[in-house]
Length: 245
Image 1: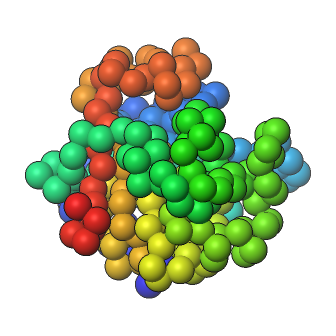
Image 2: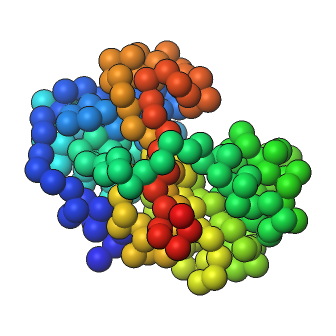
């Protein structure tokens, strides 16, 4: 079973979708809870629409929208991941209130680190890591192209992968590149906070729980970036495999 299918199969019950909000940086789906995902899309639609059933998502079953997570349309997949996060029951007792960037800086000190996705903490991590490789589909200064993952990731002692790799369908191939003795983290608000990750070689999962849906959805519409959301209606949580606690 694929990782996405396993996550969907592990969801309990269903809820009516109260709202779907697609902003320039974040997408929110509000059903049982409010789930977030990084807004991901391309403009080359040709003869298809980015969201085929746009305009009729509110009031639908959240489970129906979860199936969008496997769509070839990146924007539909974004909505699907947000819907998964909106239904997911998170075991808070398994989580700690830890910022993923701070944790990675701590665990990556003196190590060879590969990060898939350019995060704001990269400059600080670069100062403490023995060696740092940042892989990006749109490389910034100092980054490597995403297609070098097969060379870089097997060399890393610590690997951090953005949860948006679930949206573009690269997550499982990236996880297969990680050494068995490396520390593997998946991070970002798109990341479903479920222990199912541990069955796929992940050691640390860092994600988000929305505490104030109305506030956060308004911020999403107003073009907020995640750094602006910190401490404003969201809780940053990390779940760890036992050997890394």
